[in-house]
Length: 464
Image 1: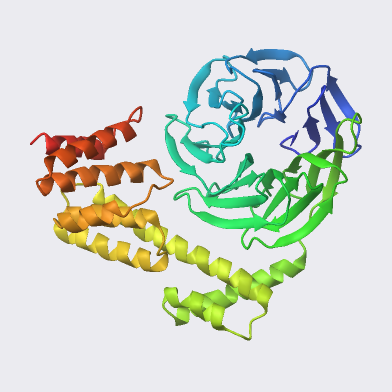
Image 2: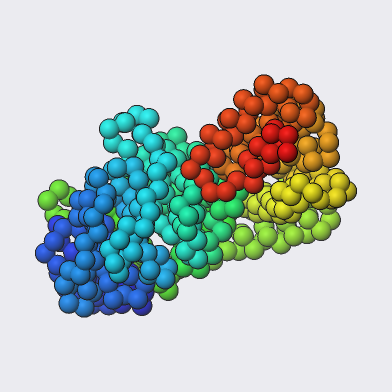
């Protein structure tokens, strides 16, 4: 289901594809062909629908089928256009994510990496896919309990998020592209940072969550569940704003382009088909006032105290209303994470190069240590510290630090850790262990584009 870009129409799938007028509620077109998932193109001239293993493209004004895209080996579960309309991404039962040219019908690339569902290996679909607002990345969710971010240009897997404990059913980017959400049968909606893969918020209250979407302004999140409710959340604080009782299991949901309407589909009873319902959507003032109070409080505390003390101050203040405290803590944690990510990003740009002045590497260490103070459990900081220690010649310290690194959600960080472990071992004269670590690094870099750390490690171990 999806709105047309101007909000005047909704397209729905099922036993047939239907287009509805959002003002009158009348059906304006019906296409007598099944469509498991459907959506408009960004210019509203086309409709795409999934029919088994195939994607069909239709003329939105005449209902004429224009093209069929074939390539999936099993049923398609999810698909969407890129923001500029030049590509389509799809995911399905064959555990692949595929990118298509909608004009020629050619398959541009196949992304492989999702695995089997731990509980039901025979049912392991890529259940949801979406392009980022700038078209540079793709997010995919799977019944293997994971969410992955891919580079939409090269098909490279950028990172994997493993926070869910059960089937991932839906994924969605925020309008600014800085966050994405995932919905799961574990009863949670999780909000993630696109750059680091860090989990920013966990929204709880539903039973099994089937759908999730951001409002066009990014301030609200909607979610639908098998518990027959749709919940609206404040996207910054994670507070539940309101709950809609649908009267049936939620099949799909969407915000209108202006954010003033929510559309839901649900099956009220067996054999009745899907019911489409439109709801007025306006954020109430209560949560906004709480957020404003909490935001002002956090601003004042950050001005008065060193940043890592703000959390303790908020927790210890017995005069605070609990709703304000909860929101203030969320804002403060987010700000700490943003500050830490900025420090780590600046440091990484220095550390990637092997020929910088040693004083620059020492400054990078200071920034990483500061980031570790702000977010003590950040594995990326641990890996970057090991890299920095290697760069200043502290090989034993680097080796010890890198060996404490756990596996991260960001593949390039894992590859950097393996590279600098190999190089530290080589510098310490442990040649056999260095070669073993280099082989691990080569395996991590398999099928990946050019890897500068791999090249550096290979040259060092070869005596170049």
